[in-house]
Amino acid sequence: MKNKEPFDFERFKNEAMEGLYQGKKMGGTDGVFAPMLKHLLESMLEGELDNHLQESKATDDPNRRNGRTKKNVRSLQSGEFELESTRDRNGTFEPKIVAKRQLIITEELEDNVIAMYARGMSTRNISDYVKEMYAMDISATEISNITDRIIPAMNEWRNRPLEAVYPFVFLDCMHYKVRESGGVESRAVYNILGVNRDGRKDLIGVYLSENEGAKFWLSVLTDLKQRGVDDILVACIDGLKGFPEAIASVFPKTQVQLCIVHQIRTSLRYVPEKDKKAVVADLKPVYKAVNQEQGYEKLLEFEDKWGKKYPLSVKSWLDNWTNLSTYFEYSAEIRKVIYTTNAIEGMHRQIRKSRKQRALSLQINHC
Image 1 (cartoon, helix red, strand yellow):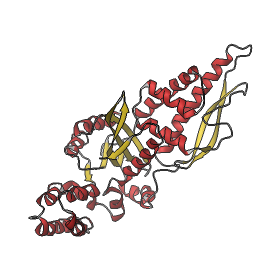
Image 2: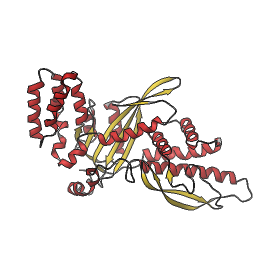
Image 3: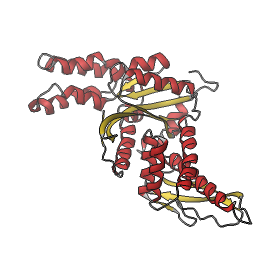
Image 4: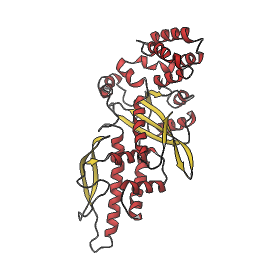
């Protein structure tokens, strides 16, 4: 691997993976949403203070910044984290988005922050969104001051430098439809969830496009490379055609693990209802095998039984076996983490929930 310090995978397995073995949720202090929530809320607080200080300039005693204050806040979804804000000299600043003595972040506010990051938004849309988040009448100047803080913060988060090595990265796309300009348009959000060498889950990228395709994924992977990612040990993806090739062109040493759950769903597309239960039962010995060799033997048995009746179902397993069987190279505990893209799908479920809070009626279907 291209890294100044050799990657100690044994230490990673023994220490960093412990939390993943235990099935920790995406939320919590070490979850993917806490840093995002902290980042945007602090930017909004700065925007509020900017507006407050501007208003004091016309007085005989102009106010100014005076150090910073910190407090621990808690949300239902992201757990506890430290929120930092700037004080004013006169002590007259009363923040609105998170009040001085407020220690609980409402679920609605957190959902709104997640939705804002998950959606590519114009300056006008962000301003409208800010007004809705405050749920009160605020001046156009205050909205502008807050928006001026939010936009650079969002861009900073999207373009922040990344770690050199990620043992596991989950890449997946959400599709949704949005009402815009009197019509309905399709959008695709490309999400990348990384697990770093300390076992910490990190949402390392969110990208917006009109649809999903291997060509756009190639641009996403290239951006990760430019932001500092030198190597990925295993990339966990769905069965999008051309996706493994796109990964290989940017990260040639990366192993690809196709999602077994997606693969089973793909197989069942060609099977009528009456045989689906039996087909699923016969596939289980394939992906539950002790090792790759046993799994392939079970796949050949599956082919003997169902190949003539449902050739397309069997062909998809045989054609993709190399990338479907990567997880057999690892211990049973690690297999549980990488054989499916469930880790990032859990994040998608939370984003779907946040989008339902919006007045815009959006229906998201996972690809």
